[in-house]
Image 1 (cartoon, rainbow, N blue to C red):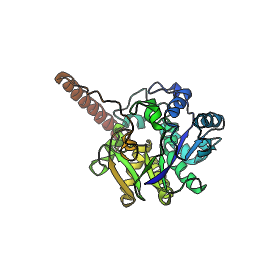
Image 2 (image 1 turned 135 degrees about the vertical axis):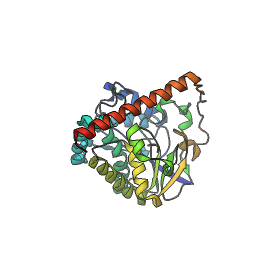
Image 3 (image 1 turned 90 degrees about the vertical axis):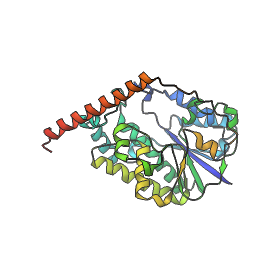
Image 4 (image 1 turned 60 degrees about the vertical axis):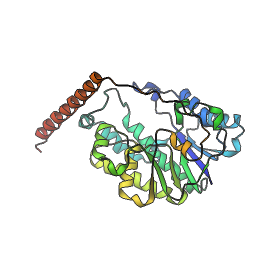
Length: 304
């Protein structure tokens, strides 16, 4: 069994003002507190004003000596040219028209959100470069488990996470990427690979960062941006030999690989009536028809 070094990060991008899936800074800190009693070595990237609050939470569990906080004054200055290109994509109305299934209220500041999601992989790479992380490294989102959405007992997180996974990039999926058409993933905001946890051996952290950064650049060439899940899919497509794919469900990789004792909230099966199934089918058909019409109008406009 190998002890895991956990890397996470939190930067306030004003998500409390989002109309869709709004979360305040205090809510994120509350979610972090739920799992922050894990006994593993923890590296947290955050802004200087939030660093004391992170250390206060870990110190409250007697884990200050197992915690390193890396203060980043401006996360957008890590890759400023890339960020500016992402902002340029965000400003294009045709990009939103391409996202046929997008909610008109989501997302505000999409470039900010997608850039911060990209920085997950820079943080893991940087932690290795600083000599702070070695062996098997796992990314956990700062708000992992959303304060009890899956695992119900915060006291059960008081354990040392270990697992038997080898020297690969370990990603967890509900649908195998070999059976996924990535263009639909991009267009429809669909999810193939999970963004947390992502586990990587220290010798591959730099390569993973290179691959997801390259994926971001490739999307920008198509006048698109997306979050880390699409980037993982593209990285896997380029270099599948360094990846190991695990079929799982949201948050469950932690339980399946070392956290078997964690109590899971029972799932409530949602029954869909025949008439609602028909309505959903017609809704999707309408969305695709609207998308086809927009693409036809764009083709005429750009004389394609």
